[in-house]
Image 1 (cartoon, protein in one colour):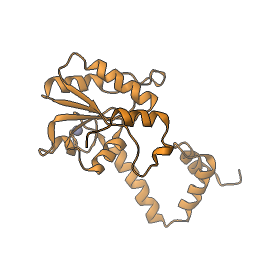
Image 2 (cartoon, protein in one colour; image 1 turned 90 degrees about the vertical axis):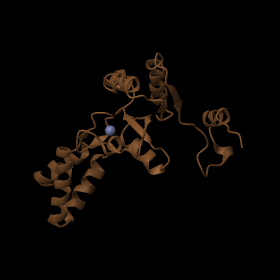
Image 3 (cartoon, helix red, strand yellow; image 1 turned 30 degrees about the vertical axis):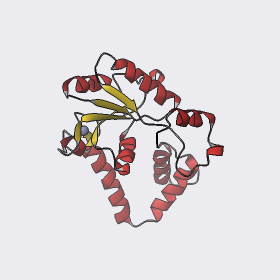
Length: 198
Ligand SMILES: [Zn+2]
């Protein structure tokens, strides 16, 4: 490679990020090089600050700057409801929808023994403890309807089966704006099963 070593180092670091190959890492590095130094300083500082200050909420494992996250500390939230999500991005998506007012439990992954992700890594013992101790009326499973998401949901249902708590899951169906004729079999099957009275 004809690039100076300093630039090669940046490219190597960027290319180690998920979704960035060597080509896009090179493009990104050259773009950064063309920006004013203040912009790069701000980028570097924001990354450092994020890494230093953000931690996981002690109750729900959402991102937080203190011991507990803003959702857990919000007295307006319905504390009898826990929504189980895969990661903070899923939590944020549900928050943006603006209809859910309960609490969360963030797994930070789905079950994957191959990657060393078992019940303990997904904070399931803590979920069990919360359901037992916090007077929870309903656990809403909001994991993606993928093979591993489904397996994790099924596992959680088993995991909580001794506890008298209502367990629900998000309905799966036909996405808004989609033509029924082009929906795949599995989606249609789920949508028909979850049909509603009008
Ligand atoms: Zn929290």
